[in-house]
Every structure is written in C-alpha cells, then in structure tokens.
Length: 133
Image (cartoon, rainbow, N blue to C red; front, side, top):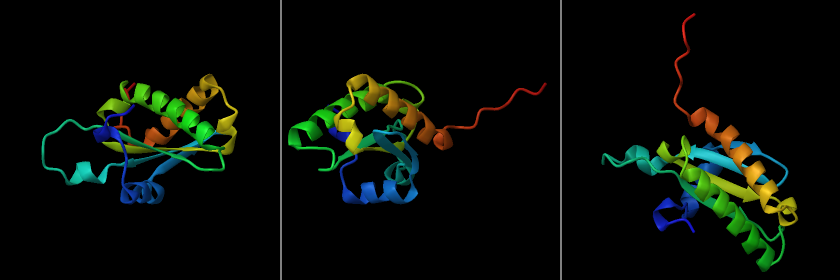
C-alpha cells in the first residue's frame, strides 16, 4: 500500500495528469506522468517525492478482478518509486488499466508497467551532458 502522501487523490490532480501528462501505452496499461504542480508552488526545501494514482474501470472486470489488478499495479509502482530515477522526481504518475489487464499475470503487468513508465518519464528526466569527443 502506498502511504497517503504518495498518492494522487483529488479529481484536480487526475485532470492535471490527463491534460499535461506524457503518456506511454502498452497492451494492458497506459501510464501518464506530469510534473507535480504542488511541488513547483512549494517554497519548502522538502525532498521531491513522486505520487501515483490508479484508474481501473468497470471495463476491466468485476470488483474482485479490478481490485486484484489495482493491487498488482500498486505493488509494481511502489517498487519503482523506491528506485532511481523516479524517487528523486517531483512527478505525478497515473496508471490506467486496460481490459486485457484482467487476464494478464503479474509478470506481464510488471513488465508492461515498468516499460511504459520508463518511456513516459523520459521527458521529465534531467538532461545528461554528453561527452565531448
């Protein structure tokens, strides 16, 4: 379970992600990443922390199936939030499950979520200076 301060909770935050986020899709998930507007307005010298939200519609399946998919996605994203480069970025992450996620096993969901997350994060990563040769 993600702690409360690490979750996207309000409709305004989800709207912000939908309007300004960078999207990357796979067969089972679509991941959106946007800069956290609360962090940019903050004047406190706090450590930037990513926050995540999940969207699993009724198209995915019944309540039991949706909750299983959501638990698996939460576990994958929580693991990614503990690793670089995501742990140092002040971003919002939205993971939207698509109907094929209901039949996907944990390994496939993990692989597709990590791949889509990496692709959606690219524009938010700091520029790396190239070696002059």
